[in-house]
Each structure stands twice: as structure tokens, then as C-alpha cells.
Amino acid sequence: CCFGWTGRSIPISTVSWSSCEVQAELHLHYINFRYTMQKRFPSILEVYYKSNEWSGIHGIRENDQMTWLSSKN
Image 1: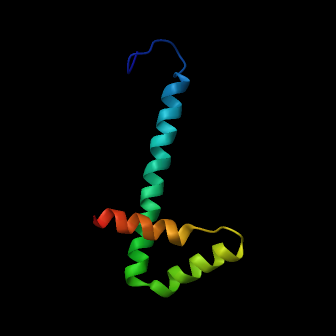
Image 2 (image 1 turned 90 degrees about the vertical axis):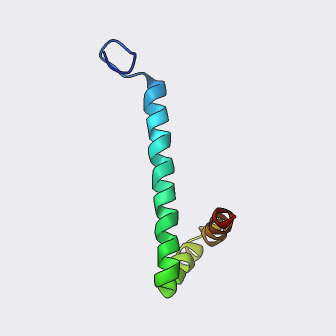
């Protein structure tokens, strides 16, 4: 049929790969969105970071900063 497989069902490896690709794209989109927020509305981004930290989710701010620094190099 299409993409090299025959039959009615799509191979699991294809579904898994597609899922990983979608997750990677969404992750990059969120990082780019937060970068834009940091440049335009830093106080709103600060509320986002603080609310995550209050709810027990730590490291988002640090991961964003490391990503932004490594993308400049």
C-alpha cells in the first residue's frame, strides 16, 4: 500500500516514530513560545515559572535558560 507496508494496520514502529516526532515539535514550539514571552512579557513568564514551582514542578526555568544559551552558540 503506502510507505512500504501492506495490509490494513500501520506498523507500531511507524506510530511510535510519528509520536516522538510530534512530541519533539511540540516541545520546541513551547520553548520558542516561552522565549518570545520572556522577551515581550517577562512578568507573565515569571508567573508561569512560579506557579509551576509552587505546584512542585521544578527546573523549567533552568532548562529554558540552558536551551536559549546553547542555541546562541
